[in-house]
Image 1 (spheres, rainbow, N blue to C red):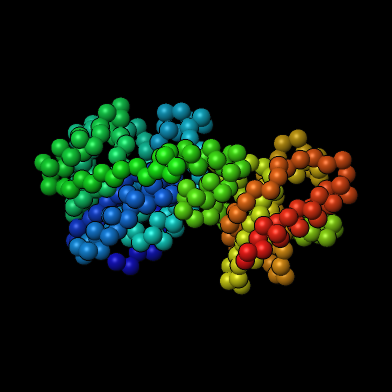
Image 2: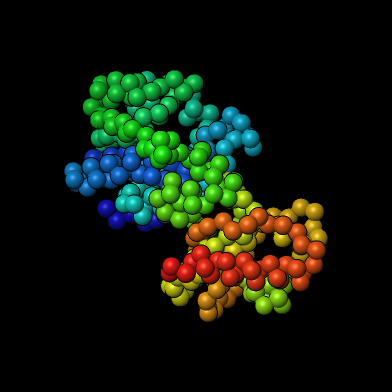
Length: 316
């Protein structure tokens, strides 16, 4: 099924004439635990000439009940959809988790989905999946409803790393602590930032360390600091080694409050123009962002950081 990389709604599959294999979850980060749920849906759809789909939610369901105090997402919906399509999912349905949806009775949940997706054949969820009004529905509720409606229900055990379940919560905590190695191992791929290059204050160029600046501010922000990275300039298609600073630049900014900026300095020859799209993969945390007494002191520290990162990335 040739589906463009885009967000869809239930209407995309309303008239589908093939069996639909549906994975359900927030899937924030699309980490290894999520893949354990998603991959069986994809492979079953392929084996049975069906369509693989994901039902996800945006914003996070907790926003309905807690407002701004709700869960901060690891990645944007756009990035999540692209990642899901990259793993072979045919259609990604992004449902707004509103009061009406939250009020659906648990024992009516599958009937609701069947009304939206008449060719629904199977659903795939994690073992801790909860749903329905008051979140009273569990796997047994789903199995009972599925049996009555002719829908297969697959419950996937949680994947563990070092005895602890792989979860979006663990990844968020690790991000905030700057534990990039742990984040990457739980995701199963490198944590990534994407954006277009914007004009900066040019101070890096004046110091001899020109940077590509991205106005990038995810809900779940990584620890402010310096990181070893690899980056891809979309127009060139080449991966380069680099060093990045994510934060509010206390040494050079006089503003009391400022949105964080991701600044990337290439450790290899490259050319990047304004408005170029770049992709940054985070490899390792180097040090916290801090305020220096002078620009010269900052320049000396950047020189040391660059040498350290060159050594960290020397394996290619």
